[in-house]
Length: 102
Image (tube, rainbow, N blue to C red; front, side, top):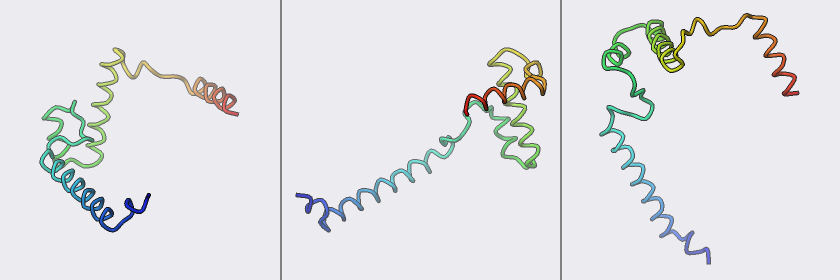
């Protein structure tokens, strides 16, 4: 019953189908290279240019942090600097969480 699934002819057909599938995916992604899956579509053209320009890694990280901070403030409608806890409060919360896990 299962011999026809494992025959050399069927193996060849499956490998050929996989080859064409991979090839078509590569071609499709290369033709649509402007927008890839990992691209942040909310970034403006100016910011996209600044990200790809000759900025240092530190400058790129700072730009990303500023963008994410603005996005946080817009979404939650509050300043990120207002959302903070003292070290003791954080330590207490972590202690509570660790007790729940155990």
